[in-house]
Amino acid sequence: MENLVFEGFKFMALGMGTVFAFLILMIMAMNLLSYVVHKFFPEPEVTPVSSVKSKNSAKIAAISAAVMHHNNVKS
Image (tube, rainbow, N blue to C red; front, side):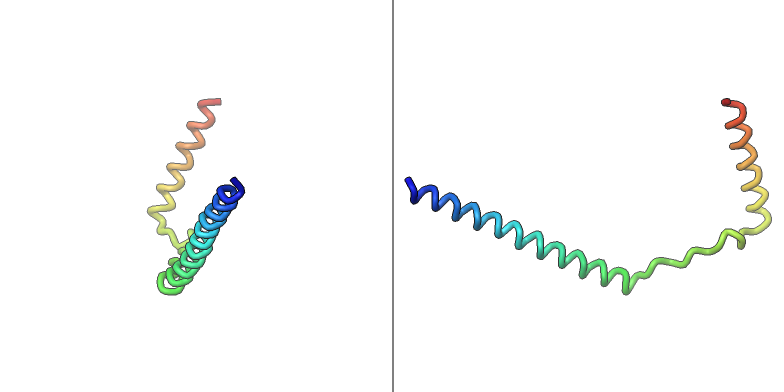
């Protein structure tokens, strides 16, 4: 009976060790992939809002007014 319990613990340790090793390997691979992606594909620079043309400013003002009117009508 003791031999079966020992074998069970041995298989449990082997299985948990395998899963732990795989998870560590996966984390290292994900960190490496993240490094490579950020190095070769940097995030694009965001253009400031002040560079919007006057046409877009008029549209933004109209949309903002409509949203404010809608919110005032609901209340």
